[in-house]
Image 1 (spheres, rainbow, N blue to C red):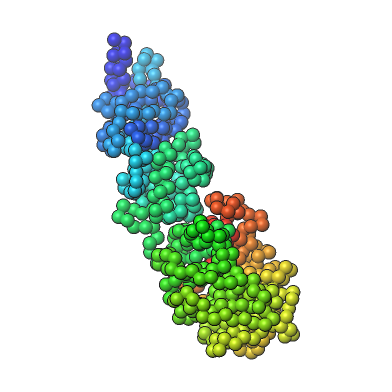
Image 2: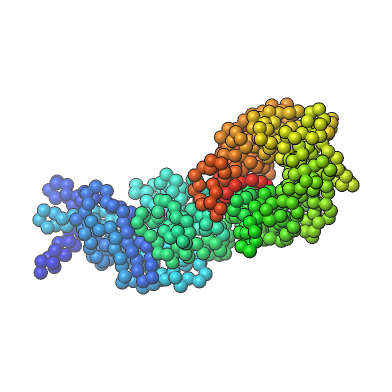
Length: 595
């Protein structure tokens, strides 16, 4: 009888005093306000979890369950009551595949046994499901329901259609940069620090790290989601991982970044046998291309070194310096189209204007070996050697297609190949014309669009110069020696020919050399050990890879090699301002741009 009277009092008070109660001018509104409510689905179970209350802890919490969104918490939807000190409720009176909607109402006891109800919490969506039985993950059926219940709730990963408590709309990046999980489009809108999912690569996807709790399944990151101490069922995490590894498609089968109208940056991750693909328009990682051991576990570690795209943007080529092979890929589908053994550690690639052939250097060759390859058939046309040239590394083709220059890191000189007959001659880096500069280790080179100036970097310990050869005045020796104070690695001339950008490995900087004045401006603090540089198709943006191996920045993503991950720095060419950095795989080296 007393229980019946108490329940009658509950509904009488609830009808009169929601969200508070006023009597004779005395404020007796509940002192507690609702926290965020979320639901975690499992096989024939929905677990409700809510955050701690703001203000006083309520005496009790009433739980309401409805069959449709937007339901009212009233006597017809009342479901259960738990003590105010409880923050979890398991609902096992559910049917798999059925939608359930929940709300909470904090309740405080009055002096005479009255129950005063506070403001209802946000609505939580539950849909129990046996994720262990999922064979092919589908976005609408499996992934979005998971987000709707456990992630895209009030105060968390909401979207532009949701509203703040005061009724204002929320942007996709709400609550200080939290990304939205309200839709597939919102998910790939990303967050303030970039993409949260990398298609085909759960091992590089932030989303997985923060929901996973099993180090045997995937990496584990902090903060843990949905809440500290609350885990998603392992079957849900496994389904999420499979969905990402299969491409993270939406319900209609569209892959993220299927089209990149602004172009793509391909960046070598040498310590992981990966090529990172950066979507220029969004600045997000769009995928990783596997090479060497990552592509085939039966292969030796490949150590990709340089990547180059053909002039038509149809194919790209990767040298695997350890596996001693050249690989050819489709630029549209990333499909591996061919492999060709190249002796003595293939390093750099120079493609002809038609893209039907390429010159590949062999870094460990004491005879200055360069291999001419038919890229259509992926067969060797001929081997070209040069006396008194050793350890050829960089290869660059003049824009008129008549000459190839090769940097010989071991002999301190360059090889010039005449393409008409493939004859060779040596070019000195010593300003006196001495062809053998043992203290110089020419590493890479680039030529201006008008074929006037050839820029050559120096990788020798203690080297601190960039060499410029005026090909129209005297192609046998430098016309200018430009000091930069540390070892230079990659050099790239801007598409308009107005300047050359040089990576300074020792000083963690990038230098812009104006042409033809050869004055130097320095961009400091470009990560640790800047290595490679390339430009966007319109020339307004420079992309710089960093090695990050000696004193690595703390990684956000783990690497398969255990080495410190590297970064791609994005630089505004006009202002020399660093726009952002994008974390990629370990040991960044060569890079190229696909328009």
